[in-house]
Length: 358
Ligand code: 2NL
Image (cartoon, rainbow, N blue to C red):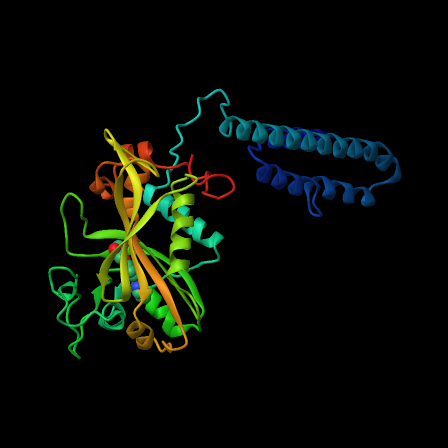
């Protein structure tokens, strides 16, 4: 009897002292496990005289129940305390003010590039891209720019160090090299626009060493100057969001087109901003022409079978024009305040249906 009472108070104390679930489990095993202290006592019943057993067995069953209940209770309590600690440490204060969110903006150059792409995509053009680092052939020779042409001189072109074979790579001075690669690698007809970075060693108020261009190319069997005019008219109408834009073509010269022209559009300068499509001034916005047959031949296209037109314009200048941005150099200053002012909302993707810009 005494042993039972002593074991009960011992075990109850051990249970009370268990600080966590592992410690409690250890107590349970040492009491109720196969070789536990309560289990051993139960086994002792077998050697007792029947009279004694009758007296002791209910006490032992009582002990087993008391200890079992105490362990269950302690377990529930430890679980509750653990949950409470977690709730306290993981509490979220829903009354805190929202952290300021740093929303990005679309750079005007990206916006204008997307707008132009959207317009030409609608006319059935694909977008082509190519490397910024080019070789002499794709940037110059294939475009009928002869070795003594001033554009090849050091002051215009950024050259990379000379290689062992004497050749020098360069930073492309226009995106025309991508059209050359397209004509070399794919079968005509071609209908592509090529946006991208271009580089010239030139830096002043209206020139930056890196600038963005978009060129277009159409090669087919009967493509002619009338198609060129129609495509560019549709572009101006959509891009400047006016019903009609008067255009004029002035004769010009590029080694890669023949004949070549510069395209102006009607505009008026009202104070510090320009209105497109009306007035009595003209503004030059791009250069264009029929692709020189020599260029086609350089790309493996038979000039007697195919012909086409091309044009090129500066994205930076046209972006300044459309969105009234006065200083070219601000495009590349990475000033967040400037971008917040002139930048565009990322979700307002330019579409012809939904409007190019808001
Ligand atoms: C300008 C003028 C132009 C082209 C670019 C071109 C490309 C190939 C063949 C023929 Cl592969 N032409 N591109 C044609 C005429 C003018 O750019 O003032 N750009 C800013």
